[in-house]
Length: 542
Image 1 (cartoon, rainbow, N blue to C red):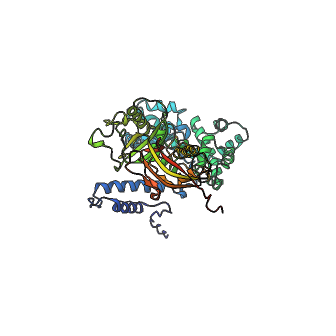
Image 2 (cartoon, one colour; image 1 turned 60 degrees about the vertical axis):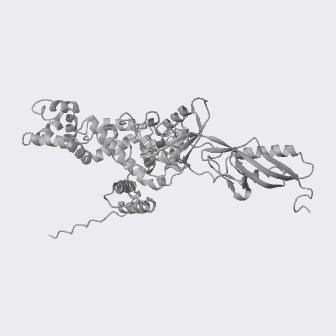
Image 3 (cartoon, one colour; image 1 turned 45 degrees about the horizontal axis):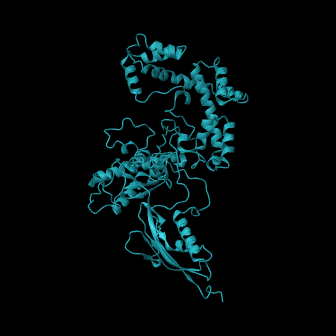
């Protein structure tokens, strides 16, 4: 007899954009080497920073592997061992960490006792009878009370799986017969299980599990048959695909999970794939669930800030600005949190729309909504009482808050217009147009609307349309365009601008006027707009 050679082990080769650990590690180290300060010279594995980077690289590589497209053939309708017993293929699983203790207890008992006990548990009329059996001598001292249900599950498991395999045809016939009977998926499952109670030598909960397993096998076939449609689903086609899957015996939850086989499921949010405690309902988690750490980016902190009812708009800008620091203390009170625009920190610029009370208290409340309870109770001993959904700072992020400020802008220019115009009316109209530009009452035109991209965190609170972004410079060309919107303005000469309080005006040749990072422009009351009459008419009129 010739024994065929064993297949050699081969390394997992990820397909782009996935990457293995070494590829990610090399990218991270190359980036760190390019941007690290000159004082950091130890790039060897023993350096703590390198260790942290390699740990992060491993997490990314593991996530790449888990969400690789090639693993989605039967996903996400596979067994979920973390789900309740009533939502699994089988009627129960062994709790994590208990199998070794149970095996040790069985091994320590009399020789052959495991086989004897298995026969006794199989012969029990119900789970309650089996647990009661383990509560009596000689088994009472072998297993603890919490272990007894798990022991019953373990000793009944082989019987349940054997019956499910040997009587597959009978189970399949019962499930198929009830599909035509109407009603909900749960009702059809219950009728099929009732039909099989006189046929299968199993407990009612075990028969229900066998029925559920058969129906989910059909559900999985339905998903695989339409996998290409699911992956290509759009907001327009998704409802029809869901209806087809529901008609194939997927309940509402399973149909939703099946739609998660798409890389970007239309209308799906991460919480649709998680229970109330944030645990994933599918494994491996969907890529969109990797974005549910709250917050994740500077923009996510701003979304959190907009959740406060007193905030209209909010932006995240780099650096520390005057206001409240991450620990709830006013900036500038100690050298450690002095306002430094160049510091590696993030400041939330918030527009207050309600209330006129203590600004520090308001900013502290906004920070609590954005980053968590540290803004009100800094330096906690340990966060044992933070629940699963509480927002938290990413480790190392310094996030502060500052009220949106106004930067009064002085504008001086000469407006060229025809003879006979009302100079005061033209100047008043042009002032109004400049003020409207600074307010950006109309949002700037953007690209055509597309399907929203799921980018977390949730719930999503987007920035209201319109308005000037803090720190955005004022382009002279936009001011000229605003002035020229008046039909009596034929030209603009000697345009110059400055922020009120600055020493000098910037001419139009400067291109743009910088404004403070935490402020938006408003037209100052004192401006110098004059009108010059074009006695010879428009250029090119002759």
